Length: 433
Ligand SMILES: [Zn+2]
Image (tube, rainbow, N blue to C red; front, side, top):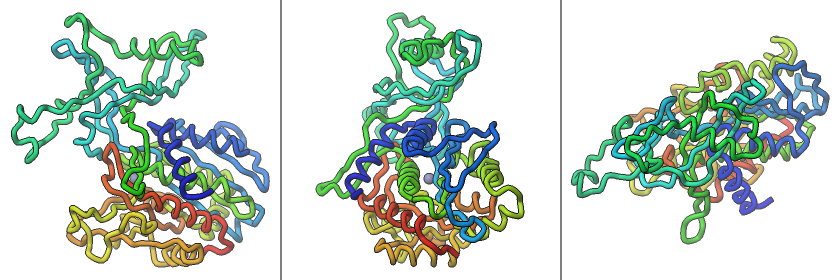
């Protein structure tokens, strides 16, 4: 594999993953195609050595692992974590609104979305629909309209002369996307019926009787791609954090079976990770307990293990250079960024950073460091949460990006590939800490 092949694979993965459900199923497909065996949480597990397995929870979180030939008690797990969700707009339970004959859908804001870029985009809708089948059972469908079916038009500048100076967005009033113009102003469209019609059209859901509920999200239909005079950048929705998921996936697929390794991709990071399938929930601990057997063995194995928590970092923006500490402004295409915070918003410590710095040096991968300005607050991620839950030594790292949480984010075209090489070196390293 080379950088270009890696980036093309990344574009295809993100383009096919408008929601955490699609991201998880996309990873599951790639893993099972490569011979990973899917385990189900409700079943008893018989794990072989060596063995390659994958478990999914809620269709939106995934843990894949290799039980390696070497003794877990001596050699631990090489673990890599990322998150499957991204900020976006979610359709409300009773979303239908008709104003002046326009059919609109009410939305909630999921996570810390940058709202301005959502205007004037060709939006589609995807997610999970739970329905009653003709046989009388509840079933789920992970769907994607794929076509641009909605838009949030801006208000013209002539009607808001201050728009470029002090535009504010009222999320309740200004965000409902425009879906259709109705022939009859008094018509009462029903979103569930529209969903039913969409499902019935799909050959795989011919048994649908009635839509019971859904989790559906708007997304931008513009596909990921290179940008820049010399294609030095990649632009896409959901680079935070599907880029990291894709890196971890590719490295796990090529990890071999000598060491034990694990990929953890969880939902709900953008809203704090506290959920039954999030990083603050019981999913990871439960999988680890089933692999390790008892609590003492788990503790001993965790003491031998290291987790790379991968989530994007803020590159220093040339138009806003004062937003970074002058010695810690990561540049795009200059390598992955180790993230450090004195107040444990990141879980990196000197021991885990030392290990990764050495591995990077040996692999020829340049590294950068990020700490926030001392007079500004700091974001966080799954690293501190996961180490709090299972007690594994952790490093927070990520590729530098611009426009984090926009509907279209920007990264360097070299950095994902470099993080992949570093993760390969980590999965293949003989010694941890
Ligand atoms: Zn993130």
